[in-house]
Amino acid sequence: MSTEILLQAATDVRENAYAPYSHFKVGAAVRAASGAVYSGCNVENAAYPEGTCAEAGAIAAMVAAGETELVEVAVIADCPSPVPPCGGCRQKLAEFGRHDVKVTLATVAGARTETTVGDLLPGSFSAGHMGHP
Ligand code: THU
Figure 1 (cartoon, helix red, strand yellow):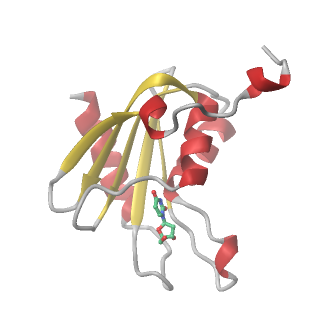
Figure 2 (cartoon, rainbow, N blue to C red):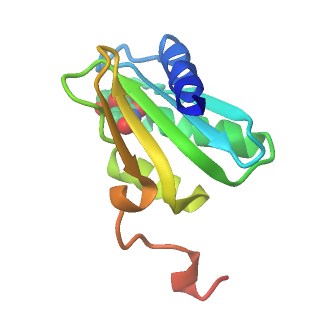
């Protein structure tokens, strides 16, 4: 049930995506440890590399609200198969989510794939590699 709520939040925020260059709108939602849901959409830029992904927006909203742990993620786009997060977003998700955090990838047409933060980025670089706790 909570996955449905998360997917709905991702679906809703996707409508606000700013994607005039790729025309590929993406919505993402994360449920934080408190239970609160934060959402984000991709925001592109005429200087292409300055664009940001939906996942980055959702994570930024979570951190801005004072939370640093995500416990579930949903991402949705209108594509033939559930949208795989880019490499940078996998690293961003791994910063704030344990390896067993469930990630639901979805299409507007209704296809879904379930994975985890750990499966999306095995062997990820983390603070521990710098000797930090
Ligand atoms: N995009 C996301 O927002 N999240 C993903 O998981 C994949 C790609 C965006 C970035 C860019 O605005 C557009 O999709 C096309 O790459």
